[in-house]
Length: 172
Image (cartoon, rainbow, N blue to C red; front, side):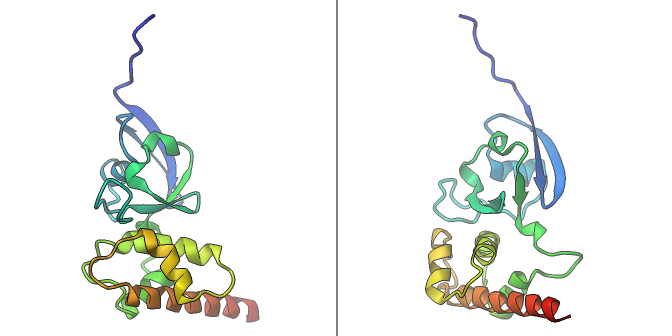
């Protein structure tokens, strides 16, 4: 039997924040480090490397995933959204603005993961949301500073802003 050789580097191609991107990385490179080191998008934070903190949460095909335990080669050809993809043309996403207005952050380390998890919740929940729904959704994201009260308020406020924006579009 011949010895199998593992390539030193592999090309990973993804669509990230609606832009096609690619980089050569070692096959063992985790998605979080592909995003941060190979692509230079440092908004995604790594706090644990065990999926317990959620700071590394990104959206993979619209679904929140913890990028610290997913191999970059596993997302070949998929769509990824990071916190850098939220603001558009210098305007904060309503969720980012709500976090700012409601003091939903302190040190900011958990904020990228909280934002991405919350965005997925808002996109997947067309009906009413309450505090328990938000707390359940963000239960995989650890914040050591805020106690979650203002984060929950921010997500619910963003929900209202998004609803108002949709109503404006419908009536115009």
